[in-house]
Image 1 (tube, rainbow, N blue to C red):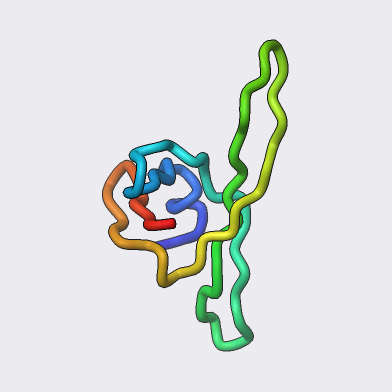
Image 2: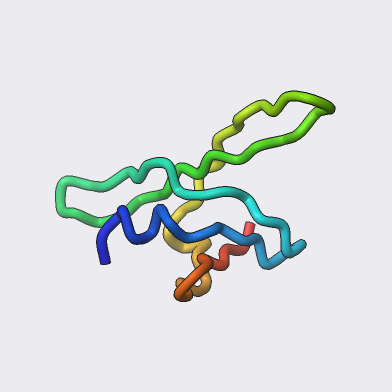
Length: 73
């Protein structure tokens, strides 16, 4: 599976069912192991939105489905 395939999937937190966003970037070791994904999340305030970043470590991923990635934060 390519990173671009994962970037098309929504990230959903199992704790509260909230959609966090989508993968923007990944941190990978020299051996090719994934350390964490950077997810761009958006918080809405009235008429504008402000992007935030959340790092999701590989151990926090519980399931990668066809449409979503389930994580436990």
